Length: 196
Length: 328
Image (cartoon, rainbow over all chains, first blue to last red; front, side, top):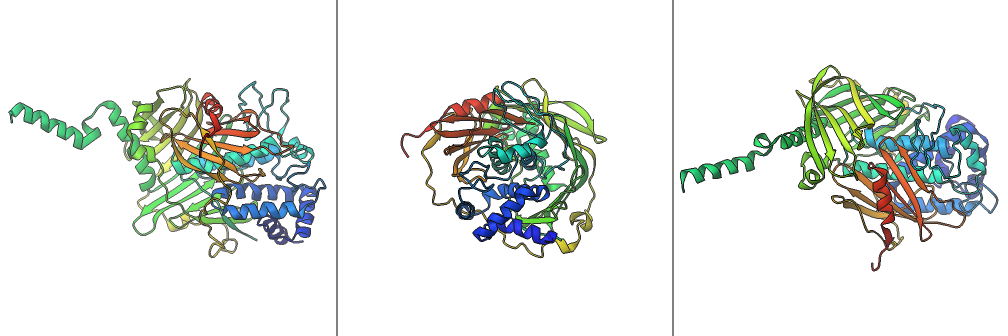
């Protein structure tokens, strides 16, 4: 499959355009291929940014299609399964989502330099030196970002971190709209086409 | 009328009409910031700035043009990490990611960059003190420094370095109550050409990868047929007003959340209330990045999340005040 075909599969999946069996196959491919997963994560997060722009109906349709497409097996896309619903891995995904949140501040996504994440845990407020934000549960130990890519797959539910990501993206949209001392206009992204 | 009364009256009238020019130092600081807000939209500029939060620093180039023919146009290029670009004009916004080889296009939203600052409302002045603190030099240019100090512990403060000549924003910091900079944007170089060359405002990526026209430029749609749950935010700091409220389906959530957006003209806080589904692990506690903090708690089988560019205490207090509304 050419790169272009790959990208159009991913985007079709995102748009809810794949028939159920295809969607399941694509989900499996995404689970197995780290590069594909990376791209999917980006699309997912960017689509989060679109949240305010996309018709609500479209988002609901997508969720519905995907959930009916997958049966009770622990598949990545199964909303009520034991595996996280979103591909956005907690910390690596958080890096991008949080970066997108910062777009709201300055108007562009910062370069996604993959710096190793050293999560400094505080009892109540997690001050992070890296690209990553994360909730620190009282009994939880901070772990390096990269490992959490794999933890996401086996974690028994939608991870708190991926939920936080999507909230932050939403926040950043409306932050831009109400006008804060942001340097530059906030940018939201709606539709997309792929390049070559 | 007595001559002296007339003179007094005239003086009052003059004060009323001319506003900041005759008023106190504080009003001068307010006016400076208002002029700065205007300048960022109306000037031509081409510059490089650093964006710093915590230990992370990124750099960007921004090119901004405003003229009668083209209107306002802008291009932002990340200089560190992936070479992403965003290009904006009055019609559309294009976001280019060479790593994904993707191009995203959307309809431009009309923007008011600093609504609270171009027309400083009484509310903003009630909760923030504007103080001109002196001069400095940024990107080789003399700058006036203005501090916007919150009057309560519920807010952060801001510091702006404003070009003494053309009022361009040269540096901006978000500061906490200890004066510590939580995040900052600072130009390291900037120029103001009379005219911005056309080729500076178009993407470097070959034309083949850019869309001829957006496939589907989607405009904001009304909320779905999900009915709004009966929730209410009982407390926000004085001066914050509700700007938006609707149901929102977030990508990592199974059900829509009720979202409230509050702003005081400078800072924004969003409140999300989302029903927790079986087996969902809720978020708890704080998470911070730069000047933005999120706080999450659980109440009544619902996840309450408050996110904003305000001190953590404020977020927690707002979250604690979220309750089911008595009547709809």
